[in-house]
Image 1: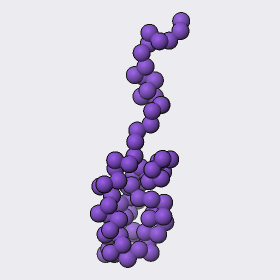
Image 2: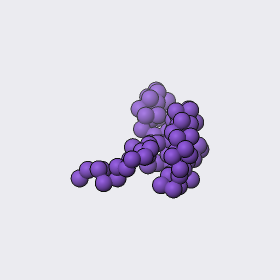
Image 3: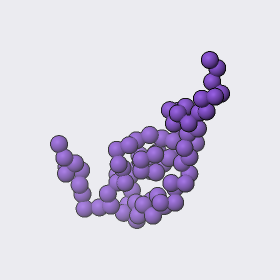
Image 4: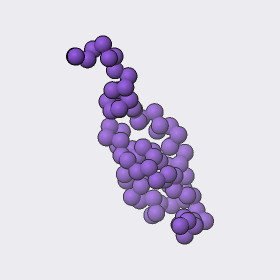
Length: 83
């Protein structure tokens, strides 16, 4: 299956099919758009889309790494654990 059916002669969506909204920034971790931008993308004018696309590179700093999870557990000092 290909995505050719979704191709149009307009500014493509920046979606990379990793759709997870970051809880603090409220941005999609895949494309860096807001929920409102994602929802209204198909109705946006080319100029409005262009503005969003120009802002995306500046948004990556708004998404911070999580403190917990597997990476944190693996980096944990084993001498702190109880026997």
